[in-house]
Amino acid sequence: MALLTLTFSFLLAAANANRGVFRATMIHRTKTGAINFTQAARQSRHRLSMLASRLHTKTTTSSRVVDDAQIPVAMDGDGGAYDMEFSIGTPPQKLTAIVDTSSDLIWTKCGACTSCEPRGSPSYYPNNSSSFSKQPCSARLCRVLLYSMNVATCGAGGEECDYMYDYTFPNYTQGYLASETFTLGGDAVPGIGFGCTNMSEGFNGTASGVVGLSRSPVSLVSQLNASAFLYCLTRDASKTSPLLFGSSSLLTGAGVQSTPLTSDPSDSVYSVYLHNISIGDVTTYDYGFRYVLVDSSTTLTYLEDPLYSDAKNAILLQTDLARAPDRDGFEACYVAPSDGTSLDKAVPSMVLHFDGADMALPVGNYFVDVGDGVVCWVVQLSPYWDQSIIGNAMQVDFHVMYDVNNSVLSFQPANCDNLPGPPGSRSGSPRRSPPWAIFPSTEVAVPVLVSCHTADPRAQRRDASRRAWRSPGFTEELVAVEDEEQRKPIAMRTRAVGEPMQCSWKLECWMPVGVPADAGHDGEQRQAQAAPASLPPVNHRR
Image 1: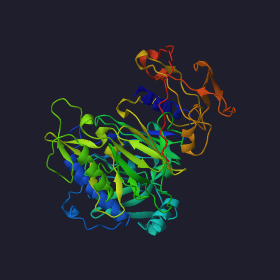
Image 2 (image 1 turned 135 degrees about the vertical axis):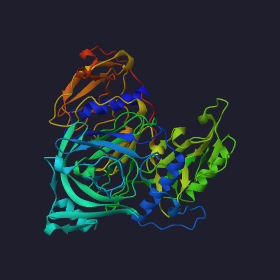
Image 3 (image 1 turned 180 degrees about the vertical axis):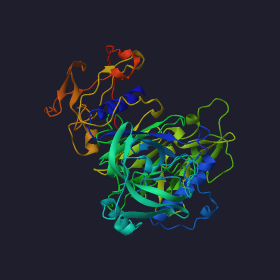
Image 4 (image 1 turned 135 degrees about the horizontal axis):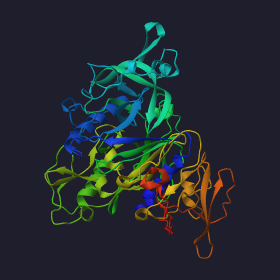
């Protein structure tokens, strides 16, 4: 586990020298410190209905479909949503907003906003900011809202871009388009277009709005001109989750697997191809290419039939626990082991087989405690034709990277609860990273990044014998040359990025976990005792 944690510390250190890479923090918004899966089931079904409505899918005639009219509308709270911390304005005003990878618009409550939900959450006050400005109808983002999304009108003689953005009845937000300076992780980014909302309905919790991270031109990802973004969702709801925007080379190291995003240019959401699922010794039938949506704001995972029924039956056949009554749409529930038996010994393994990548899930990602001594399989039946979703509960303890430029989704197992904090600013002019202070309790060595800049991520995985840490835009690289016979590092040096790489070398990089020397601990620097670490085998699925 230390191996994977270190890979991310490289990521953070590298971002320090890479212009245009920004880091934000996500909060797992719960009042109790744990997800209420009864509430999560209700919210996730409403979320599924909302996405199905937006994506124009058709409902099936399944008798197990829940009447969405009976589901309380709540897009935050104890149901598993994540909020992003950021600031708006000059001087900065601190806010949080729901992180939504399937939504386009960035918006926040503005002013007193007496007709806004969620009630009681902070508002942004434009009159208190010197960098605020309204966007006219002639602005590029307003034209997107007007003509591509059909959610805006021109007001005040063309000087104001008014929008009404519907999620699904009764969820909506209404206001005008503005431009402001956003502060992410200490870095100020001017000129971000967002919705200044004066009326909204259907939102609960403490968030002040929504941050859309879709592929739409109005999303935060597009406005930051980020080629990719990455997050790592923590299992402990009391801990924060990192969210990085920037280079598509952010995710490196052992265990990285990649699968293509669907290529429909009109589709701003993030979908991948799911072939089938392995449950213990059973692999479901491959029904051919099917799209599944990867979503940050849906907690549960939904699969359409017949894949859902095949997987559920495999769970029922191979789970060695006493059955418990079904509840809240969960159809595979059991009495939690009370004799000290580990849950992973009593339930089968679960692996998602994407196009070119296999995602082996930790047990805690697909079996959850729903209370009263009962554990349930977190997957539920999707009542919508051609609408399956991989929710955030199944993404916990993975680095998940959305490579927008190359239309690739990558993931890597990680211990997200124990990732190191950021070593400093994430943007600005390219500069050298600060010196590292190494502490004995965290010293470890690790091989980093299969490289030589091949464009195909699957081709990168094939050539694991040549390794080097490298990313475009960095000021320098760490390179260690291996002795061909003893396979031990015999030299280490830094070099300029432009220096050519000899791919015939056997290259490996070694770096201990650390924090910047200027980040505390009296600034003391200590010598790293780097020991070799083995590289786990890489899975290839064709």
